[in-house]
Length: 309
Image (tube, rainbow, N blue to C red; front, side, top):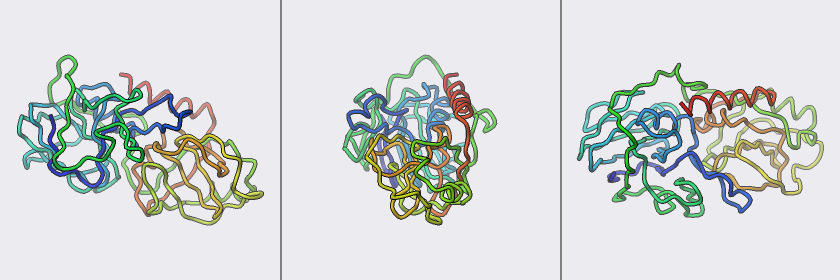
């Protein structure tokens, strides 16, 4: 068991996501930074998509009630085990009774604390991820609170602490924060945008606003010109879809996004790059870079090949 002493700002149980249920209105959910989740799990000795704790901006304090091997990845966040600093990029042994304390992120937004065996909350619709808007999945469908006790799964095989990963060993991994570049593929309503509007979208360094969460990131900059109104007949949306609303400002949909939407979408952020936006804070810059479908597939294959090792 892991006892939650301090829950942090927003800490939830997340895994690789809940797929195959969007037709019924259920979002994917899962880790906002799936590469950081996979990295923490790999260090801890788990499958890359195992359930872990997603910490947002500010960590918390968690006591291990049995010996455990754990690891931390993602945002740059100060961490200690019973007062001793936890090394970055390495797994560590947490003896029974020891507490991990996590501070405020210095860079980035989301960090992942994985424990060998994974967080063993019930599987619902094929996933242990939390979708808090519906009170579904994870630990009682909500963010963690002080006093919660999280079960840990049976550890597969044998492992020892000290596993390490250097940043260069992880494809596409970059330091969080600052200006991020997101590769996009055109569609599905690119034709509804005036050529000047498309130039604005691709030529502007957009700013992340305070209106950002697991559902979407609203960006600020010059209004984007469309051929007509931004409203369209409602159609399907996916994480990464970029909607432009009536004020001409773009919004990038994230893993907890709705399943349909009624605003025009000029392009979609490719899956491997969505994590970069998930680590961006209000005031950080965002640029869009057009890529081909072949380049998008190659990026996804590179990420999947690393995660499957």
